[in-house]
Length: 161
Image (tube, rainbow, N blue to C red):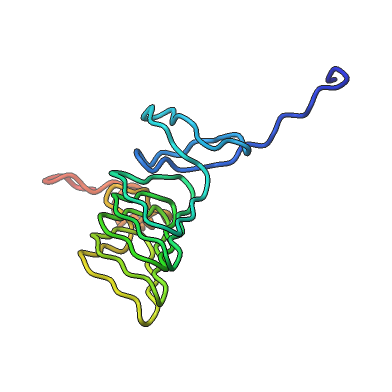
């Protein structure tokens, strides 16, 4: 039983660190937290850019949206990136990148999913699909044991099964 006036514990939100790509939980009201895996500060809020934004690195565990008049010049790491303006630098998205019809991306880009609308400009090296070393969602099917072998074991060389 809770003492009177005590609030129930707030539900945690799940995020993936844009630096080390490890999952963590944060308070739903948090703007930024320290990743327990890599000890780096992680912004967990969504970011919208409608003007020039030049920084060395722009990272969030949320979504970055670059509006039509937005211009980003940085190494960008986010869960999701939506480009309707201009992005120059390097882009790594943990979930997806969407380049709108007015969007221009001059960057090396890596993301599991990519959407490019007609009229968009995309210049640079592009890697789409699961990242190397990322956990695969579907396990590989197990092979049926071959006749004459014990389940999952192959016969030894020079010996009978």
